[in-house]
Length: 510
Image (tube, rainbow, N blue to C red; front, top):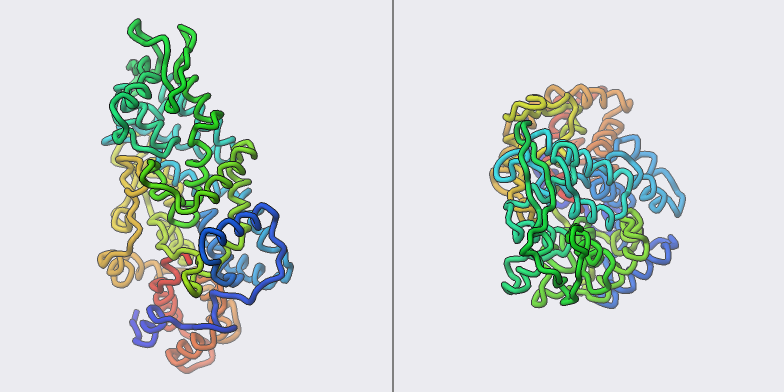
């Protein structure tokens, strides 16, 4: 496959600017935003200098699919949405996407990073436990379990780590001592790193986990999590806000901590949860990083974070409701092109490794094979398994590792590499990985039948890969590259697909 200079220009140059030709911005819309979303926008404006213009329908379509499902819209979905003239179509799309099964897979991947869902070093859960844990997380996301109940079950679970998936939260903490267990709970649900606390406060927090024991069974790698409060356990325990609590003897002290965590006005639980959702949608938290809440790292917009936390709590910790508020806001739907004077714009950021691999496979109609070096319950995963749905951090590939999939060693968001590197660019530009998928793609060959002429094929390519129609400048660039003849040959079509897959517009959320 040739790499034509004109198509290199198409891949790496800015092909449109300003006005109605700009595929990323749209004219101001008369859409009536839901009241909570409008309130969110007012808080953002109060904390900055406004927002950038509204993004185009095509930019919103691609953005919301990637942010909610971790997948691209199909060509047919893109055509239907762009042809829809309903003023409520964006809000309706958000509602539909939040109910799609892909939501649980993509957000399960995000939670898998935080919860360290991984078979082997350094977590050593073993495949049976890791896959049970992953399946449970995705099931509760699909059911939209209240975030408060999700946290309570993880913190207080007891039983076999093979048969009670939630027990793997503490099993994967990285240590068996009470302070390590407390550190896991603090990191995930209080957004803080326990090692930065004063020794006395660390000891008080660890006391809630002092009775946790892990007992082996005759089944390889299975352990039973039990609570056995010892005689040295203090009668009064101090909660993180300084309040004293006295769990009845014989009860699990973790339950008292979990109750304080999800109900106390002094708990950071709601703010941390809301901030993490904001981080996952915008790439930067109101408190950043989202696992580093501390007095000398204050929120950039305290009023906004407080309001989001109250909305989250008042909804009964309904994650999808909070997502809908944010996704329907003008803030989320702002253009990625920076506005004047530092106005808020949607932050451009590279697709996650798993999402990028899945997107290439979706465009080309191909798939990757994934296998585990750990021999049970299977060596090779079923055909068609998407990268975002891999159930275990130990199951990976050289491509995913190169593109920055996190090893899940620490549970910190910083583990995921998000910057494009030179080796990654070379992999996408020159490796057989991409070129072979393009050359053997039956799906792309089928696109030659999607239009009677080169214009129809070009439209189909752009809708499939970038979820929008090409601009006139792009059409002219492609036309100059085509070979003469009535039916466009496979060669130029694959060259265009190669250029688009290597374009920043494909590789980044925008």
